[in-house]
Amino acid sequence: MTVIDIDKLADSIAKGRTLAAIDLGTKTIGIAVSDIGLTLANPRPMIVRRKFTIDADALCAVLDRENAAALVIGLPVNMDGSEGPRAQATRAFARNFASRRSIPQVFWDERLSTVAAERALIDVDVSRKKRAQRIDSAAAAFILQGVLDRLRARN
Image (tube, rainbow, N blue to C red; front, side, top):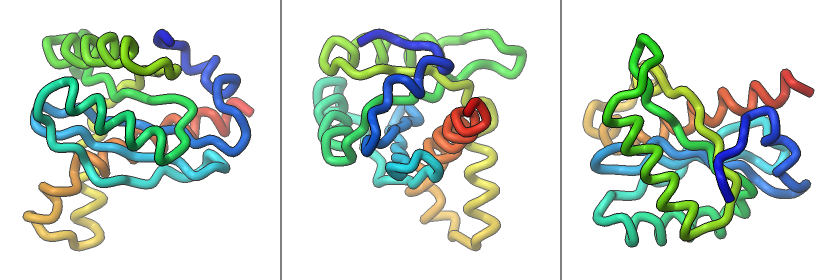
């Protein structure tokens, strides 16, 4: 399936299904999954990136295990709203992933999500070493929570 607009996302999620989000880094893929009530984002263990086929298979396994109906992809736009090389790489990953798995995809502006996730981990006194292991999944949870809040406000 192709990329859909955020306003059409709610119609793509059947009852009893979850919503997943990823924060695509150069070394890891952070993952978060909602509850079936679509109210709370929960971080999941990140995927260490190797090559696309391995990464895509690992992501498909998570989507299957979590019964995800759609995938939110954090889009790393610049602070001025323009898209640079990282955003282009993210869009390329989404295109390639769509050829392997037919699931609705939504892009979500992820500006400052990693900063917010790091602050939240610091606030709960997570050590620097453990923050490095959890930051991408925490950022994915931050991204997903933004989408869930938008869906709830829309209803």
